Image (cartoon, rainbow, N blue to C red):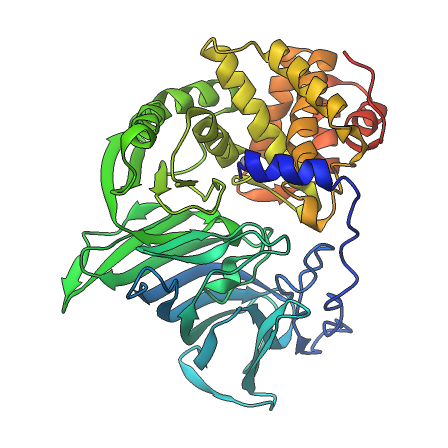
Length: 494
Ligand SMILES: [Zn+2]
């Protein structure tokens, strides 16, 4: 994510850390695993300390097939649309299950079947129920399983659901999820916004492949992750756009944005398909800036591939919407930009395809591994293109951290509402540059490549990163990482 305006504002005001967790569901509750043959419900949360009711336990999703029928607002003055959808979720049990949960927020379930067998609504063991509690941020669909599901067994759950779409907000009040816009929807889920448009195991550790079939009024364009699956199909005044995302993806990186987009198709290194969607209402200097930045995507991919290894996915591109959520997001293979795509932002979101999307944070507190790296990649690109040396950008950032008194935040555990605050980005990037100065270029880039290779299409923790860098450099780095990531004082400069 890139959000300088909001980032800086929060950074100045909110270095007092907000202790998250506590409220909500005990993730361990409801999932006793006391012996073979004992069937139990999967947990209602996946155990993230910041978002205890996000994600679910007891199963691993393999594939989401999302059939979305969307009517955008009839009039731009009322930002509400209508979504009617069916999700077909293929999953594998990771424990013996007699019930399991999905996260789904603000939309009503109308029908569920498991392996083609209808499940009735109700509170019985073989029935489904839905809880929508905004106060505790608990939005759960529970599906009873009869027959029960044995560990290792696969099942396909089909869920019909829908309702009015609005403008959901995260815990800081920022727009996210399925954000209804005047001409469609801008869909950006980080961190826990995916349940605003599909039933999901909303845990960045449970990656899956996705198919999207998005039906919108004829003339509208729907853009998701991955590659188009055939040409759009037109029928009765509606167009269905199908996209296939074959690379494993965390749910916070899924998108299905709808608008008045113009699509363009190009190629990157090794024939990588690059598909850009630019809103027809992006015009003038914003369009010039956007076109210039998007034209650099192939060169940026080559530059980062040379440093960090081959681009990790099957496609890339951009979705540039004239509507704004005030930030850009690295949605997998196709980042979403608000109003304009600037060069520094484009290379930042591209950098996330390696750092964040291929290797994702195990818990949300590990967010600096995403944002520190993406920020450092902005510095590397600016250095490469001669705009400013990396040393100068490091010095400027240290000065900014000094003047804003921003050293006090432990960025390995910044607090739920500081995920996208200034220190996570700035201190994170500064720490990486200091690490490079300490271990040398060879060990630093070898460690980065090892990190990306070892944890590709998976997720990992700050401790995992420290271990990879210690192995790559042959040095003990515990004290270094504590000084640069965790301690509340300004570290000694390299
Ligand atoms: Zn970012």
